[in-house]
Image (cartoon, rainbow over all chains, first blue to last red; front, side, top):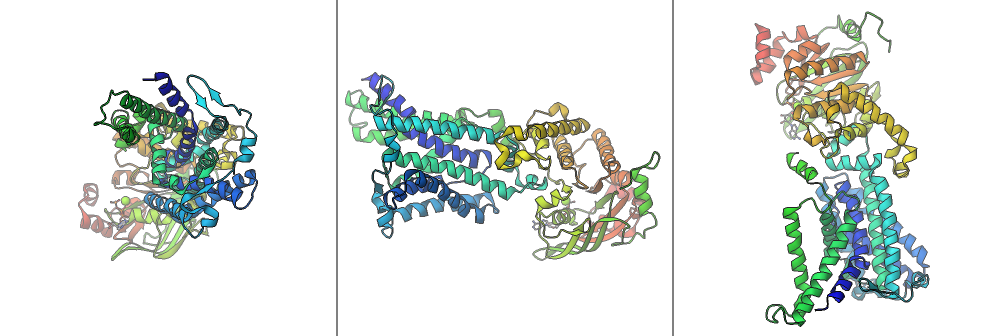
Length: 331
Length: 291
Ligand SMILES: Nc1ncnc2c1ncn2[C@@H]1O[C@H](COP(=O)(O)OP(=O)(O)OP(=O)(O)O)[C@@H](O)[C@H]1O
Ligand SMILES: [Mg+2]
């Protein structure tokens, strides 16, 4: 077995493009769910809006990339308003239902034949819509070390992506430790108490939904640009649930949780896959037990098992505070 | 509002203002802070609140009593915007506020606590307090990320929070999660938190429920202090000793209707009141009163 290769693959994944995408998606969810208690089950919709805004506007409407990115942010704000205006006055579960449905509607619209011309139907959009971005790449030759290996384009995405994550995280950190963040946390605990103290709960929930949604659209930007293509089925409910997994793995309502969760999630996924793959081809695992083609599914089973163990033995996540979680039971 | 002179307390002022008012339901007061008219709230076939006219005297401590299910909490919910009426209107400081959402009611200076305490569990005690400070610059999304704009205000809010926590004997719990407080301590926290809003009218829904006798005494003191600080207090309570001890005026509700109001010593001997209470359940403290 080639352990150097396994390590290289696993570490490259741990700091790679997918980790960045899911970290951003989970940072947005942390604002919604971790701090405000909003059950947004449609984070995939915000990613789709970000990704499709970039791809469609550049490819079909010849927008310059920067303008398409700005439009993507604007569109995610519009989506947040559409979702929030009718539901944020209602009980928490309504938002959950509406968001999960909205994300599916967005995906179905993207795949529909009607808008094939602009959105590319079920094939999505492939094109050089990221060329302005990759034109700026100073690392054309990529990186090849025993632990990390990226090609030129990926390295550029990884470097800019992590820079974006750090900036977003810094802003989040400033926000959640401010009096504004305190209002959000209080809303999570008891909306009526917050109302009785003179705060406009609806407005704060809307702001939280918008900010988390914008960060979700950033994840969509990275998703689209890194692959130079968008495909509707990448933005299904599974994406939202993986983002939740990442968040809960790290520990909800902790600023760094989404990053830690995403790194661990992708490291494990790739590590387990590579180990299994090599073990099967080296004959350590008999073919009748696990075939090479089954490795892709089995890694998810094992990661799922690991997550179940985590929830049983460390329900507060990696960074969470068990004491704080226990308070819930008492309340 | 005139400052109390050396030897006339606000209590004397309140009592003087209320003296000589006929103790009948819906009677006018010289200086009402709340005036309510034809307030009706129905739950299906049940009329939970049906108040034809009610005035609450400014600067006084008014008790709202009545048997379980009389509609006291519902009436509180209506006045503070947490529930919607079927009919009726009311004003606060002469301004009509029926239909106003709860956060605006609170900002106008009318703050309530809840019968089922609403402590913010996964916030510390001090954060529970700081949250309630008013007009915080740092609560605006545009300024939140720029701490230098709100640091000074935050310090002032912290100082005031600590002062109130000391007064309510919770300062030792400053950095504990609110969920770690006992039921009685949560009641205290909720009351202290309401005061952070600097209200003109404080509405307390059963502030004494679950509070031990020693603490009750100091809580009684705090409520009297509120009046001395110029606030108006309206509270719901089943503890008749407390009602007798601190209230300047008592309003009695039964089946949604105001059945009596007047000074405590008169009202608590009123036949309608005793009937209202004893009709629903036997309350020993009132029975003693009758004897
Ligand atoms: N949300 C609701 N839906 C239906 N009925 C309700 C609702 N809230 C209150 N009621 C009914 O309205 C009546 C008044 O209830 P309320 O809570 O105001 O009583 P209360 O005077 O505060 O009693 P207690 O002293 O027990 O707190 C009760 O009969 C109650 O069952
Ligand atoms: Mg009640």
